[in-house]
Image (cartoon, rainbow, N blue to C red; front, side, top):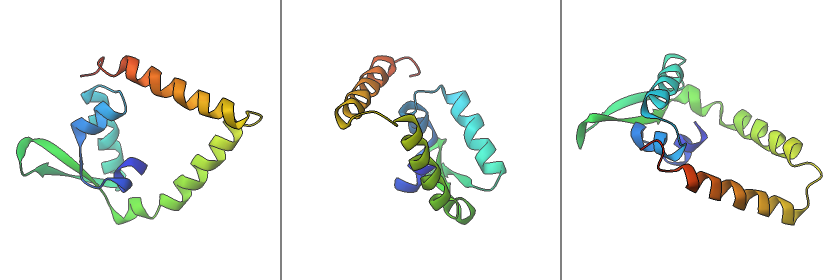
Length: 105
């Protein structure tokens, strides 16, 4: 949802690709968020087969809490790591993501 808050109206298919998941898994996750009232889907006017995903007011109301949780999680997970180690870890994760980027397309 944080990604949607940054780039409103992203295509469901693009979100699946970005997060390295298959389309069915992405559709299931978005449907759960939609059922809970956090997002809504609208048919893409440029491609009637595709959907764009938008964050609702209810979803936006969770932004601060989600950021708080993400920051706390980062501080727990990266506790005791030096700045250089954190940078190295981020670089490794980026490379690992690139290694698997073609799997779900």
